[in-house]
Length: 82
Image 1 (spheres, rainbow, N blue to C red):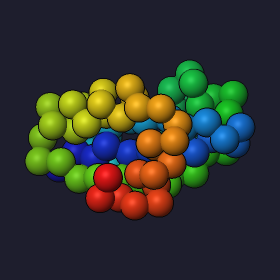
Image 2 (cartoon, rainbow, N blue to C red; image 1 turned 120 degrees about the horizontal axis):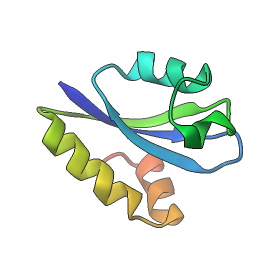
Image 3 (spheres, rainbow, N blue to C red; image 1 turned 60 degrees about the vertical axis):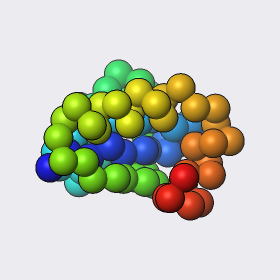
Image 4 (tube, rainbow, N blue to C red; image 1 turned 30 degrees about the vertical axis):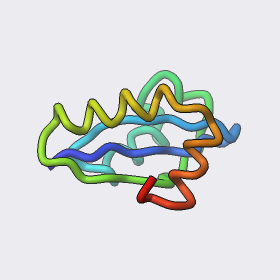
């Protein structure tokens, strides 16, 4: 099982990623071992996650979300069915 997830960084920006273990990955981001983007924007907070049956599906969703404008990401956080 893979997960697509969305983090809110300390500066208010969003980070989208894919993992098999969301809790571990959030801890890595907060510990400075995550993506370079989040290293200078800690702490991060998990605001959304979605399960996928395989990595390919999760990565397609990640790519789609990364193309979204901020207002659409905020709508996803408010209503996960978006």
